[in-house]
Image (tube, rainbow, N blue to C red; front, side, top):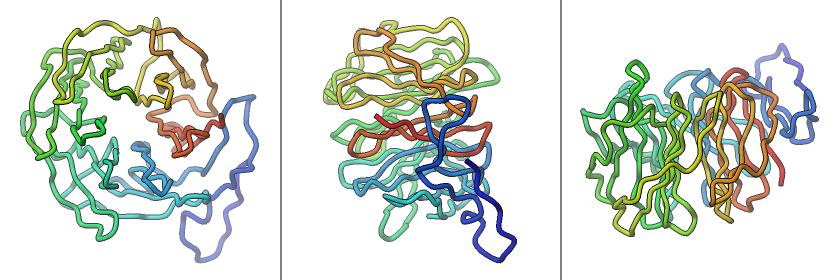
Length: 288
C-alpha cells in the first residue's frame, strides 16, 4: 500500500517510505519497496558487498541513492558533478562502484568510503554509455545505444580504464550481463527485441556471436543472471520480468505493479530481485 504524506518538515524520502510488508497490487508477483521519490530516470540498481542497494536519479537527475540493508527508505548517497547523469551501476570485487555516465561519455568510479568520484573511462565516440556488466577480474562491458538512429555499439573497458569498441553496427544495445561461469556475455537490443550471446575469454575477447532468444513484442532493458545462470530480463512496456534458462528457454514471467521496468539486481543472498520502474518512479522486489 502507499504511505500517507506527512505535512511536517521531514526529509522528502521519509514521506514515501514503504515497509517491505506492503502487499501486492493487481495480483502482481512483486512488492513495492518504496514509493515515488525518483525521477523517470530511475535506473542502476546494484547491491554492494554489504547488501546495500544503490540507484540513480533520486529526487533529481544526477544523484545516486542508497537503500541500506534491511531498510526500505532511500536516502541520498551522492550528487554527481560536472553535469554527469548516471544509468547502469556495477560493483567490482573490491566494492568500488562503476557508473555509466551517459551525458559525458564516461564510466565513473566512486569510492564508497571517501565518496571520491573519478572518471575511470572516457571515449568521445561513445553515443551514451547505458548499462554495464563486469567480469570477476574487473573487465567491464558497456552497452551504447543511439536511440534516434535505432542503432548501438558495444564496448570493453579494461582494468586500467582503456576502451575498446567491440561492435559498432548493432541495434539499440541496452541490457548487458556476464554469465556466472564467466563463459558468456549477453547483450540485448531493445527495439529489435533480440538477445545475443557471445563466448568470452578471460581477457574479455568475444567470439561465436549468436541469437540467444527473441521476443515478438514489447521492449527490453536491463538484465542480470542468478547464481544458476538463468537470465532475468526487464521487459519494458510489458510490466514483466522474464527468466530465461542458459539454453534460451523461457522459464517464467513475473508480473510487476508498474509497466516499464528499467533494470534489475539481486540481493547478495539471491532471495530478492530488485526492479526499478520508470512509469511509477519506484522500486519493486520479487521474493524467491
